[in-house]
Image (cartoon, rainbow, N blue to C red; front, side, top):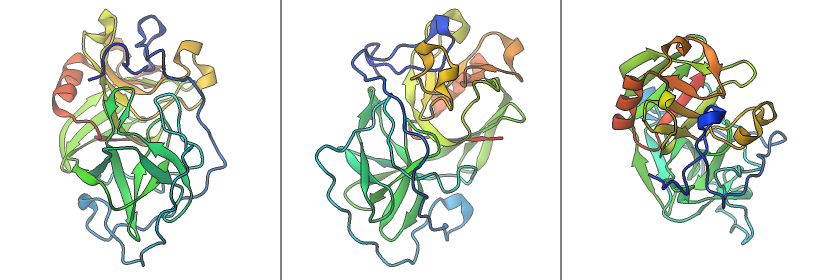
Length: 286
């Protein structure tokens, strides 16, 4: 867990927001004009995650330039393609766990666009693997919405994943699945129309502490997703990430009232904190 000096900044209420390290550059995320994804559909059964295709091996990766930008908590990548299947609720069963910074490419055999570091704001990086083709894998990218990066399938180890969260915005419902089996489902609060909970696939980056009795004294789960339209938020929240956190005011559940975070009953948050690991995929559907 990160120290108070490096703890991530979430879309919490302004009065009780969690602060990020002062050394993290607060810069905007690139949006739009990214290339389309290259994707091969899995050939194994749905519950087993992305499978290797029979496509020929793609050209080897070009060496990344020394000045390639590094993804940071408030600095998302530019030039990476869209998630090929952002609405998919097929369980994701593996994650890339880099031991050193890894170059992300815009396509198999394509152009390197950013480095994915082993830690971001003190949180250990585990990026879910959503596709494989020609000796490359596509992983979900933190600090950006519905973006993937391609990595050669060598020089790193895959980390198994067992859990997945699905947030159904139309039902205001959070469902926890483990190895394809539902373990719990609860009514929650979500973002307003002005400050919506970002759609698509993301993942749990880790956890951070909160400040204020409304959070029931429980940590928040930090997600990789960021505000869709940060300019509509208070300045103090524009560089924050989405989170899942407890909320003691039960009148909020079933309503659209947050800055984009998912608010849960305290008992639910306590269970999620006890059971979920970093890298857990989170799918937000309309």
